[in-house]
Length: 112
Length: 114
Image: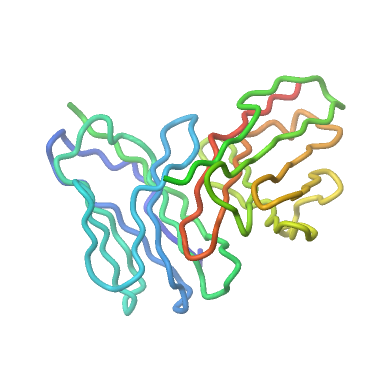
């Protein structure tokens, strides 16, 4: 079992719709959770971080964390073609090294 | 926001050449810097963890004599790919971490070995 799992997609949604991206992780001691966006040929860009159970909203983005279910998600409201990218879920485990475990990434396609 | 500068952004060189990549945290002191490699359509693969003033910790399967890491200060880490060969061609990305903060990534270096 992979430590951080994501559906590779592609996930295709029409412009203006809600895109829902999901991620599960195996280390119950994980403390911090991040969503990075990566455009083709570019490096990852941090879009959301979440540390406690519940929802965290930032503009059109909402991150949701459920530690009991070992599940973290990212919702993108009013999806735009510019949101088309690969979204990487990253989990910082229980160690204090700062090391992140990345999922394989979900490719999102927003169609005009 | 936190800014991480990575240079060069693109390198094309002949097989057997050594290539140095720099990673700098511009507006914060990084406790740790990480070096990743990414092949097309794959996720990031952590190569090594670098702490200022100490030896880097390499992930399993990464040759430490081939990928030399120097972390001279809290704002600068370098990765040298020694005697590079075509199979070393990849996208190399560094990130910097200041503790209790997310990792912030440089823009990456695309390395092409002919």
